[in-house]
Image (cartoon, rainbow, N blue to C red; front, side, top):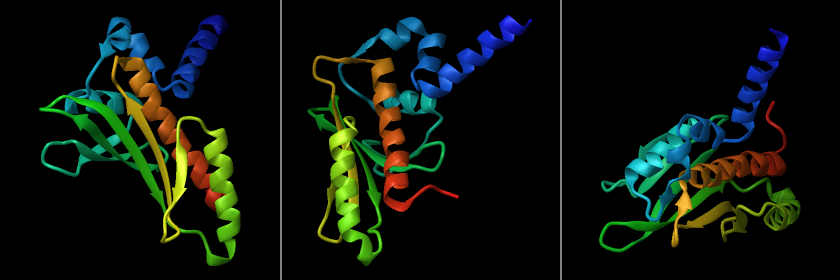
Length: 170
């Protein structure tokens, strides 16, 4: 009985640590299917696998506001769309400027994060806002599991950058 519980707990923990694990376990062939373009349904399916909530921001559903579990918020924009099919996904999250006295520290945090967190980079705009961004190119295709993982890593990046910039949430 103890061994069964340990295996079940390990599988559940793996599902939490690997966002694509749930998708891959339930629909192994579907998770390995190659996606060459991204449509609204495919994006919605990937977000559902992560437990994220999406709200369309335009009529075509090309731009969505995403709320990740744990509180991170992002805007995802399907791009490189020629006559319908989209071959790219731009993921962004905007952070308010830190206190004026901390701008030098914030710039160092942005540089360090951009150089160490490969899935995304940070840009500081003229208003002092920090823009976390990542772009996923689907030319040649990606698997459904990789799409879920890329979006999940961006959500993780939001949480990590927020903690680095503002400190740990209480």
